Amino acid sequence: MQTPDSEPGRHARQVCANCKARKRRCDKTLPQCSHCVRKRLKCRYAETDSRSPASEADQLWHIPVADADNASADIDYPTMLFMDPGLLQHGQYDVSLATVKVPTEVLDLIGDVDEVRLTSDKYFARTHPWMPFVSKKRFYDIFMRKTPSAHPDVALLFLAQKLITTPPSSSSQSVRTPLYEVTKCYHSHLGGSSVFSVPILQAGILLALYEIGHAIYPAAYLTVGACARYAYALGLNVKGVSFRRATTMVEVEERRRAWWAIVILDRFVNIGCPGRPFATPEPALDDLLPADDAAWDDGIISSDGPATLSTPLTSHMSKFALLCQAARLLGQVLAHVAHGPDLEDDVGLQLDKTLHSMLAAALNVDVPDYDQITFIFSALVALYTPTFRLAGTSVSSTSFSPDRLSRAFAVCKLVTERLHLPNFTESICPLTNRPPEEMSPWGCFFAYQVCAVHLRVRQRNRGEEEVVKFFKEAFEVIDRGWRAAGVYLKLLEAQEAMGCA
Image 1 (cartoon, rainbow, N blue to C red):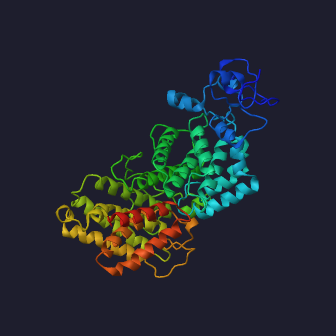
Image 2: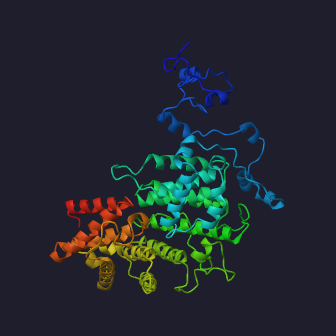
Image 3: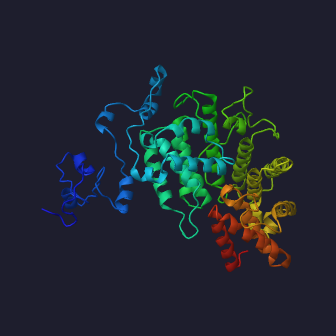
């Protein structure tokens, strides 16, 4: 007997998931078996002879498990780590990654070996220089030699690298591309499975970075929180808890950098809305900073050991270490601003002084690091954002002292004079002097806030017209790499339309 949705002559090679779970006889009819149709259940097959794109996406949410009967007989490593980690002290346990099959959709998106290498080369050329938390040497020596179909965590990392290096098409209005949806879905699945590894965490960090850069909220905030929890589960930055012992100093450094990457994103994702609690704690002064970036890429860790947060700032510190210190200051800025409008105290003055000192050190080098500079600019502007928002209103005279207003507008002037380039090409971002696809998203926030200030001043001074035009054109360039810039541009237009600026 054929059901209304069945297709004569087409049957799956395996029973559906519902019938298998209930140990019922399944007629394997495609696209739905008779039992599921009668019970109004969503019918899912582990594999079918022919699937439509819609059914493929649906199948991804229920990735098949290989040899589930045998897998259930053993206690997996993550369960032991949470329920009785003391047992792990008596021996080394291997984490089986073969219990989860990599979906065809993921393998198709990753591509063949040549495409994987091309994507990875692009990732290490574009994203890695300003967010170096994946070991370049370990990646090419170990991961590139693994077969994605047999290593789901490595496949996910390949997929995340492709996502972060593939900006949404200019013809598409949505940043939730099919590549993003598959990466998001697969990461969610592996994050809750028995597959437990650092590459899954690294892929999650890249996913969060994509969501922040393209203004996908609240997903970005939630993904950063999920990364923090996953890092805790792995034992990163948790005393007395250890996932698997790192066998080399390069691996130890890689885990440290993954943790700092989460701290950076955890602060930055809250920059526009201070007050929400962070997913990671305030870094301690004795926390170790990342080692030299170039040496780490070559697989070399100095025997002198990395610096700590209490180490005085020097030009010899690694680029990533300086960014970590700036992130710590941003966290303190956001915590300070969240206390309320009465911000004229010693803490605010000290934060202003420290950020200006860090900015001076970053600018006083032969080749300034604009990723670090834009991050510091954003932290400085975040410190004075409440002042900017009330400037020119009747509330400002009672909420802020003249000195604070003066310092706020001095920051605005500093940013404008440093970055206002009269002529820049459409292929180069004026905030980082690089193509948009190679820049970080750190500069979007401060550029938006500073431009909003100039919009207010423009109402009284026509000389600001050129500055406002510059920032708007800059957002149009940045939008080719990060869609958050386009969102900020629309917010500026909304302010003008409502007369808020």
